[in-house]
Amino acid sequence: MDVDGQVIEEQLDPEREARRRLALAQIRQYPDVALRMKARPVEEFDDDLRSLVARMQRLMKEASGIGLAATQVGIIRRLFVFQPGEDEVAAIVNPEVAERSDETSVADEGCLSIQGVLVPVERSTEITLVGRNEEGEEVRYELDDIYARAAQHELDHLDGVLIIDRTTPEARREALSLLRPRIVLT
Ligand SMILES: [Zn+2]
Image 1 (cartoon, rainbow, N blue to C red):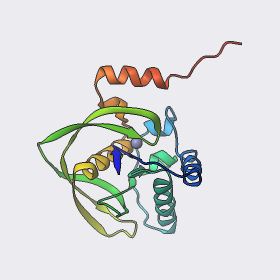
Image 2 (spheres, rainbow, N blue to C red; image 1 turned 60 degrees about the vertical axis):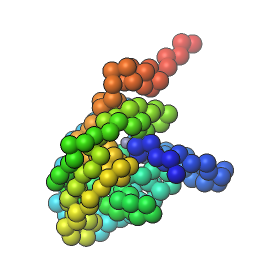
Image 3 (cartoon, helix red, strand yellow; image 1 turned 180 degrees about the vertical axis):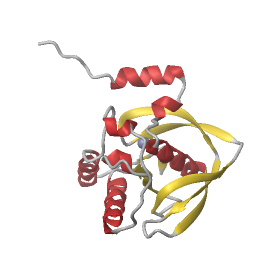
Image 4 (cartoon, helix red, strand yellow; image 1 turned 135 degrees about the vertical axis):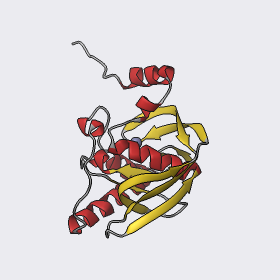
């Protein structure tokens, strides 16, 4: 498994690829305004929240993601789904970083909302993430490596921050030129 920030790169059979495309069609794509909004805290831990989490976990899996933030499905609330480790799936509500390592690393990151772009991003190599699960219980995760990177990526989404804001000026310029809508004159 090769993970680029939020996106798992893997070879898919045609049926699985079709499902990946259907899932991506339900995820807001750059430059959708929802991706730039600062999400508000979740106040109610109810059935609506739990069905949102279930839907986001399904979309994350089908889109070959390692994480997915609520803002990416147009819900401007502070929660995301993620993998705290291999073959684990969890949700965290009102997440915060309790601790982070001084050590950082730079690696290429992709994003389910910015398809076809990979840019270098510097992140803390280890973080302690605290918040609540979808039942309202307190949770705490010690994350490192790709799992720490992905969680920091998702936290950024909750503040309307994207990988193109976190990268080098050169990589940003190149990414934006790929993303600029083509003007067609007829
Ligand atoms: Zn993303």
